[in-house]
Amino acid sequence: MKKKFPYLVLRGSRRAIGQAIGENFRSKIQESVLLRQETIPNYKDLKRQSQSHFLETLRYFPKLIEELTATAIAANVSVMDLFFANTRSLYDAGVASEKGELVIHDRCTTVVSFGTDGAIVGHNEDWDIKNIDDLYILKATIGEAKFIGINYVNELPGSAASMNSWGLVQGINEVHQKETVGIPKNFLARAVLESPTLIEAESMIRRVKQDTGFNHLLVQKDKVKNIEIAERKVKTTNLTNESYVHTNHFLTNLKKYETYRTKSSEHRYDKAKELLQNKMSEKEVVNILSDHSDTEYPICRHDSTMASLIFKPKIGEMIVCYGPPCKGEYEKYKL
Image 1 (cartoon, helix red, strand yellow):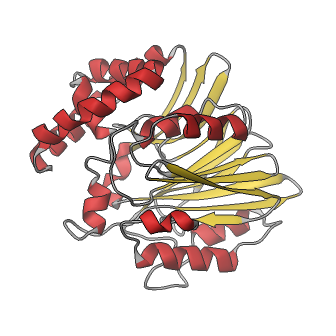
Image 2 (cartoon, helix red, strand yellow; image 1 turned 120 degrees about the vertical axis):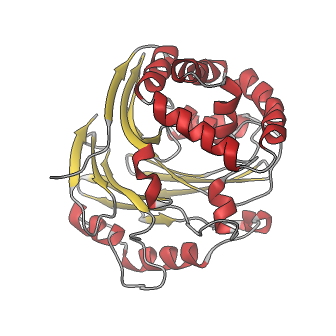
């Protein structure tokens, strides 16, 4: 039997969406918070430090704080515990693991190809495979905004890969830099989901005071806008009808702020760039996301690839594979 991720279809205010997420995943959110409390060194001190980030976020994104608060209340956890979980700059288990403090697991690969049917965006969501059941699919309608994507139960929607009803696709890639006090990157990724255009998404990201940044690979119609963030500096790569790849290291001169990069990220980037071209079919993009030809640092990793997604924004379609795409099946979802 084909395995699938939990699928929520929600409509309402941000508060209502947040509440429904908290109610549906109460036990998992509680387990996640408890695990962090038990395993993160200096947990109380780090959570206390997150208060300055909270105040900055409240200033720019009060409605998203309202959404997160509703999730916390519904899940019966502290608002600050959940906010701290969304403040990766203070503590990110992925960063700790990649530095060798825990088991090493690297992050994601995103590719874009343009053809006669518009853009095809492929994304492998990578982390420790044992956390696969922390993922779920959300289709949400908030006023005029509608979006669909894969998300983590203890994080705001948007921190993995999503698409909105304006045909804007966002693939998130972790990049590594020093921490500053500001708005956590999860909130920027969430805000992009309600952006009607690439220009508005970039304007929002440039306007706010970030703590650290993701790489936001954004696609709409025939345009790619790749946004790298480090040390409150933003570098944008703009392309029209050109294929594109991003993994987990900087491609612009922001690399001078990079704290480290992994061989896996470099190898996945090189291999995907070698294989990718325009006018690729859905199956051909799936083949890239399933690739094992670099045996040491493959794109598809049995111990890390928790989900694989293909977006076709022109027709509002997303397909999702539970686990590594080389041995799984994709399920279709419509926005």
